[in-house]
Length: 380
Image (spheres, one colour):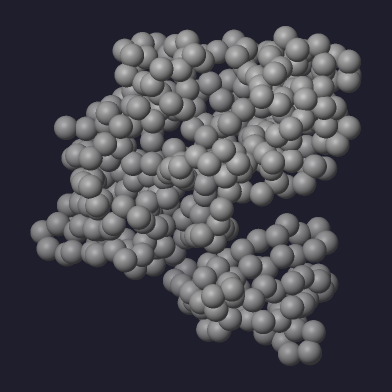
């Protein structure tokens, strides 16, 4: 597709956008995009507040176009495919994802929960939401700041969440659930009734899905039965879903004492399974293989009989398994370029190795983010 950029000053830049290298931090506050002979107004964001040039260039387009972002606009070969496109859509120092706005869930059915692991129990909530309407996952951001919790690595990298949700579409009537985030501080002091009223009047949802153990409202005063009652009063559908039980009960005694722990699949169990390096168990809980996302910065690439990537753990965007050697892994440059590999994790670094023959067609320097997927039998 041929794109023409016209600055308000009258200066034009014409180029196939993906092959164009701006080479500077643009500071044009307002531009127009020529598509099919028509101009569409859009804003061209300057570089980040630190003035770094090698950041993402954001272009927010108005009209019938969605906002999009591109990576550093440098010349790339025609056979180079962007990988993990959602990983490029956020600045690496982003905090928690913002809400998309209350109007985006109007008329939808929201599943309520934390959804940090996106495990099979969370998927079951999405399945029931899809049966009742357009499915959304509603969760609350900023809880750690409010309660003073120590920060910890997410189980799923933020930039990888859309891929996981897209994989749920086959379970959800061929519709991938959409995430919707609410600032926790804005609802923290709401009573159960005020919360349901907010869902109905402000968010405009048509139905709610929750697990049988879900609690809500100030100091978790409301339970599932009260949720059903209040939703009925406000004309909302309410669907309470039985917990998905964990078939591997041995982990029950390994976790911390938790009155909510009744043997159901939970994010806590996923974290403990990762801490044990039990990738078969992790896969059972998630309903998929665990994928680490590695940002390619400060890494070393060693070439010899084997090629090895060495990177500090600080480059990882989500939670890694227990330290050790993992065989039968897959290194993903994109969804189509996959290299069999083995991964070694120690206290400070991760090392990814593969036989030399697998690397000959891979332009490693062209990739900024890589995925490492762990087979069920990966741990030695």
